[in-house]
Image (cartoon, rainbow, N blue to C red; front, side, top):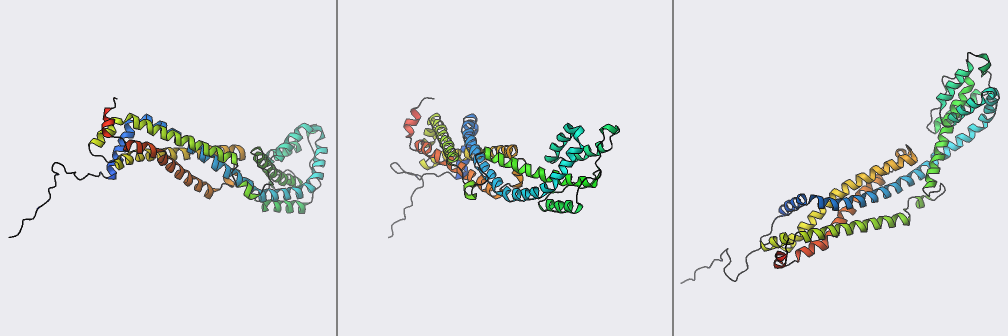
Length: 352
């Protein structure tokens, strides 16, 4: 006679421990999002600290790379422009002396237009010369005919200007000899632009003769500021999460009484911190990037885009996202563990 097979009841009897129910990750995500919505303004304080830290990190890091890219990239261009400018000055000096002699009765106007020419404003200088050559009042008219110039020299200098990417103004002058002024204007304007870039770099503590590896390296002061900002951000996140744990003692106790495991509680708080970190990092990167562009345009003008280190900036943005995510998770580990290790009975005793 065979003994009957005993089946184990799915419902635990007295003295037995039932099987713990593990909630899926989607449920943890749902609870975390609801908690963030309920504590929206508290969450915004945490997000704002992340935004400020990541924006500062992105701004300082990308600005350092942009100014080093400008300093390194402009060197060969500035050298070519200076070389053409030097070759041009040999032909321009006697030409300018003759113009100054002929404009002796209108020296003030001529000097003002000459300054505009040196800034690259050939159109204004061209209009000025055309007007004074055909002035209705004879006593104010300036004779610009038979100016000393060599057409071959002008064409050679114009070709050199085209070699550095410039389009010299050679058409529409009242006299062919004045075409030399068209070459002088664009070349001198380019030389002045690079001189202004060098001054802007010097104001930021970068000398034109610095080695490339020195220019590409962030200064210890900048690194220290970034570290301090990230530490402050981490402390802010941890403090905000600890406050969140304190406010939710009864909620945590209720979940644990209903069967929530320690791992599920840890998962809830880490997810909340991750969501806040991602949101803060996105806005922080955007704000830091925009301020970097504005600062670059103010200091270097359009050279910011001409020498923009796209690949390096993209890598910095990726690093900033990684730093923001890791920082938000690490800062929430201690508050999450504290909430998970809380005894349900003690949590339920706390009065709200």
